[in-house]
Amino acid sequence: MNENLTKIAAEIGAMDPVAALRYLSGRFAGKITFSTSFGLEDQVITDFIFANHLPIPIFTLETGRLFPETYYVWNRTLERYQQPIAAYFPNADKLGAMVNTKGPSSFYASVENRKECCQIRKIEPLKRALNGMQCWITGIRADQSLNRNEMTNLEWDEGNQLIKFHPLFNWTLEDVKAYVKTENLVYNPLHDKGFPSVGCAPCTRAVKEGEDFRAGRWWWEDQSKKECGLHTTNEK
Image 1: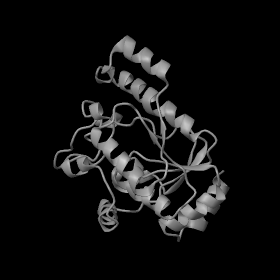
Image 2: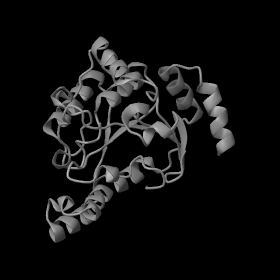
Image 3: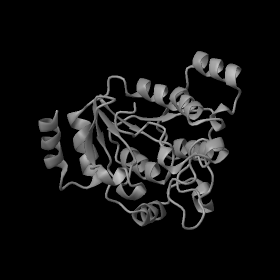
Image 4: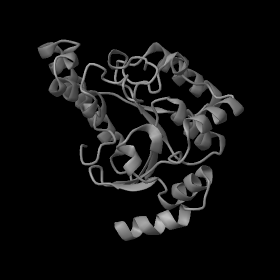
């Protein structure tokens, strides 16, 4: 796989994000998808795809615990582009068993409980969404965390056995905001209230000045444990 990855990386190396997405949508026709959580970066990539009529289906993980503001962005995005965004839900039996046994807020009790909740609400639905795919498009940028600084814009995801492409990998937050403003994209108003990233409502708070980018996610936990597994190497 490394040889194929190197070849693809060389072919898209000088392309802008839209050109790269167009190339990948042809190379992996019917086997490529983009996951959105309706954050700033994801809204930019959604515009790349829908505004340029790229054959890349978009999906989102409907965890059942999203902010009202996220649903607002979801609806406005559908209204603007008139294109479908598929929702993947948690397995009802597994979710019911967890809530009935431990209650609706068990994730606050321990890291293990929180990871169980993430597994049921996010990881397992993601597995279903990526089933049969060969290329997964994400909104990751290089400067979002120390771990992600070690990544490249095109990589092999061992856990999901597919290629991941991050079209905004080399963009800064200022680049993203400028595009959103120029193209008048709808975005989550929580971003203007100190939320650099927006996940499930019980697990996300605003970030204070000087805090790390991910300080608002799972804010009651140790900083080193703050990954749900969606983009952690081999934690799939």
